[in-house]
Image (cartoon, rainbow, N blue to C red):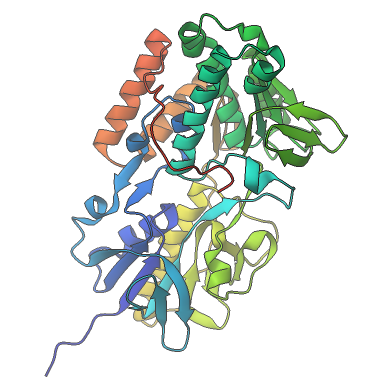
Length: 420
């Protein structure tokens, strides 16, 4: 009599949700296959530091096969999922089809342009390593071009940087960019008049870091202004061109750099698989994170839109907790037990704003300044995967802190991803 096949669980996406689902299923009596179109996991909270020439791309990426090496029941396939046969329980990919008994979808999110004309074609995004490296290349390149540009109007346009979106990513990148310009680049380009450099942060709502206590938003705004960032609130963008941004009030800002951090939406994979989609391109799921009518399929992370009042933030802690619960619910199903509903445990919010400054909202309390900055450093180092990565990031931070120097000011060949 042949040996009974173990249940096969396929996890799509090697982000936080997918990776924590795999970790939960490791060493269990199941066969697990992780599928991703890339061969590495990226630590997205530090992606903006790659774009700001603070750390190397390799410092926040870890090879997936290296992560899975110690899990005997977990495999990996580098493939792009393109469709699904719900009846046969089979994924269609750019390679051979993949059969599953249970499926966990954790593909993440993409930038949300909100239908603003020109954003997709002319803005830079910060959603993957390619985009971060391309933005770093662009920032360094415009300074090189400005150094040899005799026309003052063109030079000022080159030296104007517009960041759209005053959420955590926009605030952190604005602060990091301002410090890159104020110290290393000022020394690199002594011929430039740095009074011509402008960094603008545009936020459509009443305040930056919406959703955090007002005291933290005010601190972040004042700290950015101290760094030289022009913070514009109630400044929604109407259109983006190749060398300008137009606001809804009609004001036009000439710039060679528009960085779009205004929001995210569910990954297009949800639509490609034919899942019903709700607001923000997210797939509605039951409180147990299952697709209605298909209890064998779970959706976690940014693509998931759980039932119930309110909307969960599209952040890493939500994806981690959902990925863990989806895996546990599958194990419960295999034992004949009912699934458990998702209950989010908010670990708090941390946002850094340059050297020695951050805001923290944890355990219902608000912190600012150096203490919040130390907390931000510690939490991000602990969450970063791989001891080598932690040491590389820590050494880069220490070098920058002690010597006011960014060592990664390199313009490297990379594919164009503007408007990607």
